[in-house]
Image (cartoon, rainbow, N blue to C red; front, side, top):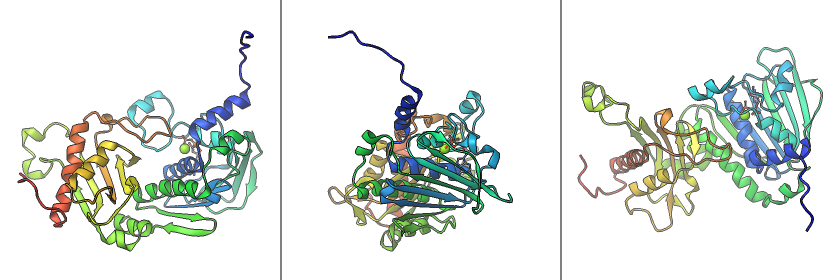
Length: 359
Ligand code: ADP
Ligand code: MG
């Protein structure tokens, strides 16, 4: 065997490998683009995809826009308007993005166009990136806000393209992502279109039930009951109670859960959010299921849209951009709060029977 010949990879290759770490499939691109729109304060976010997103992805918003002079920076590596330095990170990030790598990496593995007109600007401008080659900024006619188009994802990384699943499967994942943000942001009108056909469109009127209606339909929306839980002692009556002096490990649990007979055969409709972020935490899902106390048929899962608020320092959100799992410092307390919250809601509506006296 020959001794190995170790060589530094060229920049293009490094860029494409790195891109694969963030952008795995169309749904991951959609996630990044929606987060950018929400960070830009959009009240409308319209997503449309072609062939499950493998051929085309377009996200249009009515947010703050990107001034012409900043378009180049927007698609550059490690360039962000959201944090300045590591101290900002330590203070806690209020935006969904902050790494400044999404547009750069997407541009490395697709044909990307970013077109924008900040509200009040006379004209719009656009920049195109093709396989990492950044083009010139040009004037472009466009409405106020930003439109990002991503065509032919992975056209220059055939190995990665091969890993994509059937169009229908890729679209399912896109749908799950867009649904997740639509439910988390009932105040934003979020719409999704696949191959020219509307999948859903929320009204953006701030009402969670109305968002659930738009996304899951009437049958599910009508089977949902409200969850509203606060830690004991947070009501003004017991303000002087020393037991409530310390910051509680869970600040609140709210949202909607379904009647035990309105279920599906997968867990995918159990949507949980921690401090506004969509997360998959088995502890949260199990707590929800436990609350139904044996009222669910075997292998059936309810619908849930649950928002859990914990002190920001008690949960790690500075995780890998693709990972949705979270860890809680106070996991048993979080579990208990979620189970109590859901159980209380179901009991209040007579949807489960009380098994033990509650006090
Ligand atoms: P990050 O979101 O981590 O800052 P991105 O690569 O996703 O990094 O975006 C780079 C920058 O481009 C953002 O910091 C923001 O200033 C700008 N930008 C991206 N998308 C939008 C958008 N839809 N509306 C306004 N500005 C945007
Ligand atoms: Mg971003």
